[in-house]
Length: 318
Image (cartoon, rainbow, N blue to C red; front, side, top):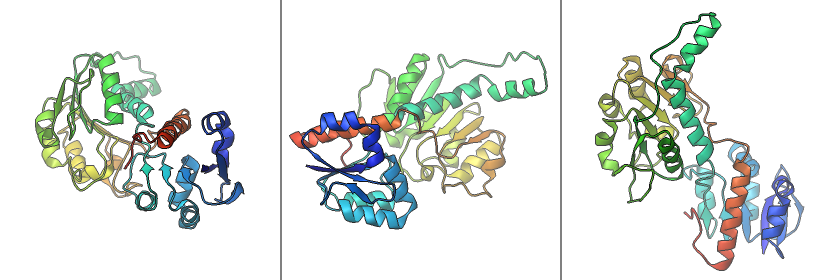
């Protein structure tokens, strides 16, 4: 088979590709999408990070790339979300398209707990004390043990958050459309039961994708139901949160604080009140990135390529 990948990915993970794609021909692309090795139309394409970002940022590059891989039997993406127009075009123009769900679960879950610990251990307040050379002990700092975390969307990211939460001896609640069994889950709710779940949560972590069903899943109604001491963390899609309702809840101290790695739109509008709220922490949708992410993407491609050749069920097939 002919496999299309970027030359930089091949050079970085040569042993992985050579050991698992023996007898196959590689079509290698440079940073501009030009073929530098191999020829013809590929049967399989691996969209690594550099190809993904180039496709999202340049219509000309994406058109050239699509012309090359159009009609491929199997295409593996490196990102979880499939709501972008580029992802939809790739799905339409490939026989089998698989997204990269799960690749970023570990770094995103790490971000979630960094924010939770930042809040519960009063890290910001301690930084201010140090700036002022003020040796003042804070007796209000807490711990996560026996606290309750609610996770909306119990996919790869949500399950990794739950795994870490159990290490902190937390009570873990989650919503999911379909039944699932997990040793790290105390109770599973249906999406329609979101309001019931969030009432008792000390932390609410949104992992929902963008869709008609999830649009504005968190609005003023949900924030009114949450504890005043609760923290809201969004690592799902910004479209699933009514940011006006969130800003109002934060401004009126109806919830304690929020950490947002995703917003709607992105970048967040400079006029958004969320920017200036002291109890809102904003990051530019970068929680997913970590040094091991490219290796995980290659590992997923290799596993799916083996399954593709043997006719087995593909992971994350759309």
